[in-house]
Image 1 (cartoon, helix red, strand yellow):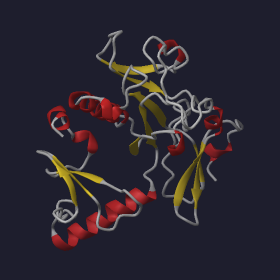
Image 2 (image 1 turned 180 degrees about the vertical axis):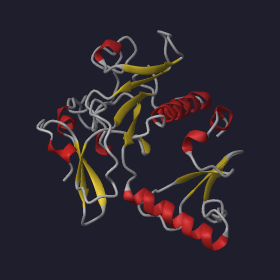
Image 3 (image 1 turned 120 degrees about the vertical axis):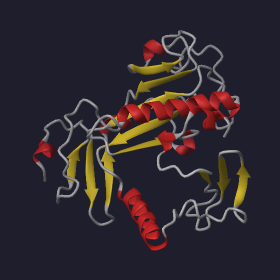
Length: 261
């Protein structure tokens, strides 16, 4: 066990290594303190909140949120998108940057990392799919901008964007939002996928993603992207959205391609 894991603060998050399944698991006591605006609603009631008084994500309630990182447009009270710190983060940005011990026998690391919230719209009753194409594109550009910022930290090895829609999916707030988490380690599942793709390239000289035969699995297509059901889907309704052009990183998307997606 590393010296960094001997923290006396039992409320600090940790990254614990599961040596049986070769995976890292985040333990974060702060997550249990999250409020939820779903608990007071019956399953048949809507998420309507005409006044926005109790929702910290609604425009006018910015003072109820954790510190803001940036907004779109910048310095505009009539914002479209806000990127803020998560008030109940799974990882702590306040901890010291970790020493790279992922290749050692260490089974626990202090839970350093970043956990942000992307508020996709100022309107409580609007969800991401309700936005115009340009509005959805602006959300994706915000993801890219934040990933580029996080990538400047040498200690950050991996950034994941994710969205839980509804209480059943794990969301605690009904106002449309997504989240970003930046880790000091690369998840083994990601390393395995990259290793498999490298092996395919070494054998064929080709990118396995670019070689996908989309015709029989195609759902939809556009100028720059196509969506499909993966041939070996691992769960029901799994969908991949794949760029038509070869691209190694999500944050390499530019505004034009995103808007026209």
